[in-house]
Length: 413
View 1 (cartoon, one colour):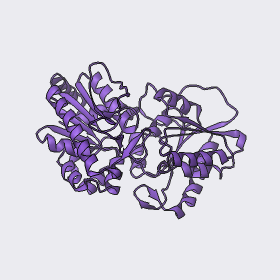
View 2 (cartoon, one colour; view 1 turned 135 degrees about the horizontal axis):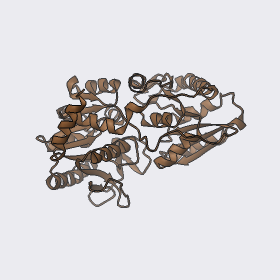
View 3 (cartoon, helix red, strand yellow; view 1 turned 30 degrees about the horizontal axis):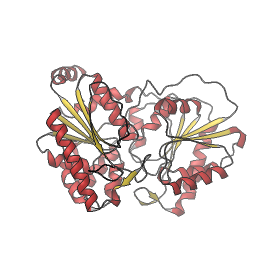
View 4 (tube, helix red, strand yellow; view 1 turned 90 degrees about the horizontal axis):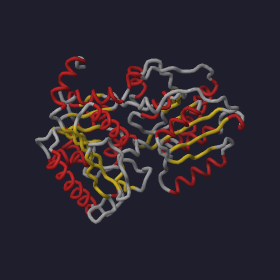
């Protein structure tokens, strides 16, 4: 790590001259990776860096970046790009296209549309640094198009899942990602996966982590209520473990009138969501679907909740667990590789109850016959946290977005 004095002197020297272009193929703001991008932009703006953002959007979408940040939209469902947004997950909280469904014609349209807008941004904005989100197709393309520019890539986990499951341009992506000037990993387990998948040198990959917004997610005294509340936040899909969560609820000994379940997030396919709703209707506890929430509303749900559960089968480093902890929730989470070690190092006093993942057939698909045991352990972990009287006070001071933003910039020194 660089000393604070040295870093401040370096920042003063480069702030006046360094311009940063942030790139994502998806919508900003609306997913975990979108929040990561948004928070980096906000914090770099506060530090005085000139910035531009290039992102995939729909015509009707609005963006919210600090004043002075230039926005370059790449518009899906347009003449140049006549299909929905390419999503890094198979289920996105908005209308999307799965990369595995790309045809050659779609790939060429994608390449052409992004190349046109990236060229415009590079020529007009003249960035000194390009920050690409996801170690996937667009990042590989940008690296090929601008071999002399400084380009770094940020891994969000879903990109590794895509390249493990999807043959689309696999060799091309694996060729160009190792030629980046730096790669950001969320935790050490993910760093090892990046090195394995892309066969790149260890020095190229830097573990940085995620931060949370302390101005939105914090504790405050709430009115006493006659029941306990369990919260879930994320995409309401099978891969986030929502089916297992609903089945695990049936194993709890808590009386039906003493527990309310609130589920926040957009959903995937209509067919899958209808099955989730059917399970919820049959649950002996009231299950309330809140849909996609703004960050302020989500923080209020967490403050009203006793326990937050995230039984996901695949994640990068879920920011939402830290947001829930900051609001006073006790946390139950599936044992995502690398997460427990990262929390132990960066969040002293964390008491997350980790549930071992079931045996998997693919990177995010559990073996059906292994789910009952997983769900039994999930129920036991939730019950333990619901019964716990002692408040938890993890130290989250080391995971602010300001600190993460500075650390990412340290990479290029």
